Length: 364
Image 1: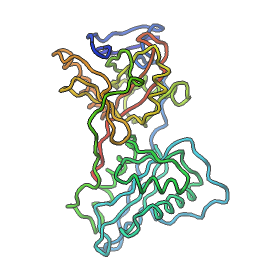
Image 2 (image 1 turned 135 degrees about the vertical axis):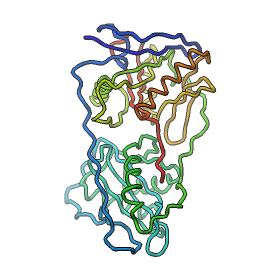
Image 3 (image 1 turned 120 degrees about the vertical axis):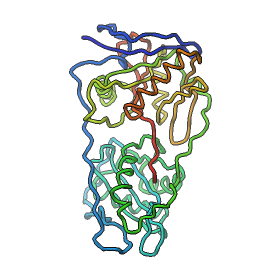
Image 4 (image 1 turned 180 degrees about the vertical axis):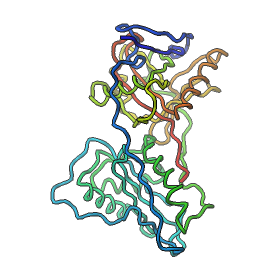
């Protein structure tokens, strides 16, 4: 079976050697993370966007009833415990209610937006008790509870964590909330801006705050690494390995309309202790990888505020250009990229595979 891998360059943690794009024939294909197999099995397509509704009350300042805060009666059976996460945001919005006070909103969705819940709150009900009651109503309405609630606003950590504890669900601060931030961006244009109480001068609330990159712990360091690229069809098949729990990793929803031959950039890390390294890496909530050209360093983002100096490269003219090109390819696919961990370039399988995406904070 033919396999194609674009290795931009590979390196140990102190030295890099340039390499050209090559086409290989299996079984000696290099990394599983650097080969495409056919036929590919696509991930479940994301659910279509749900449109907002205008308030029918003329000029009155009121919360838009989209969707209604009321929920159906709770089922008699205990909620089903799901194996996946929901995403949650609880924050003020650029709108004022009939009292002229800033409105707050709770948003909850699953990772494919097959289910969505939105509910407005007056500013005198912003506490963990009210939030936990709202979460309970959502769980009762769905008849199911998620494995965890992911959220990206570190400034709301105390309220969200307490509320989640009250309902017996783990919370996790994470940059991997792209589904939620995409929905938020849609609501800015289709809900908030058409609300009669919209405040176009409102400043962004609780923006993302990143920390300075720290040295990477030795337990998370590989022996060498490479810039690589993989067609989307190959990324989808590697995702199937993660879904089947054959390898460590984590996934994001992929655009079902993106062509299978779209080139997705990635980082391949090689080490003889690949299984152990993949296991340690699984303990982190990976956000994304970026190139710091000034430092000659790969920066790994984790959680909502942590950053690490993941690997270094010599700042020669050639290698700096290769790093720029890698970032350019990533930008063309909306920040989508991946991390693969395996024993060496010729390994028949990966031990870890993560789909990553650069995190862009929602305007509100």
